[in-house]
Length: 58
Image 1 (spheres, rainbow, N blue to C red):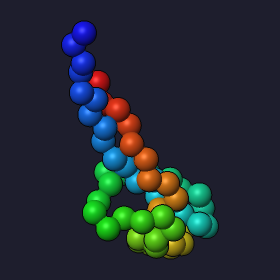
Image 2 (cartoon, one colour):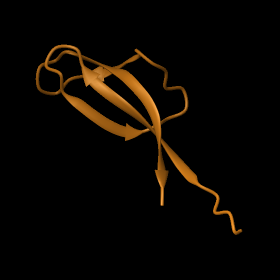
Image 3 (cartoon, rainbow, N blue to C red):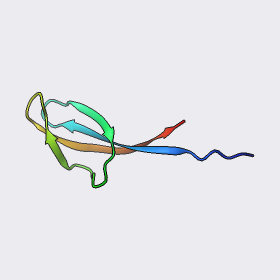
C-alpha cells in the first residue's frame, strides 16, 4: 500500500594489477571501468577501477 522509495548509493571497486589489493570507495563523477586512477602504496603497481555498482541503503 505504502511504497518506500529505495535509495541506492554508487560505489567503485579499485584493484591493483600487481598485488591484488582491493578497495571500495564512493563513486565519483567521471569514474569509468578500467581507468588507471592511482599508484598502489604497497607495491607501486597501477590501481584501476574494476567494477562500478550500487547498493541499496535501508
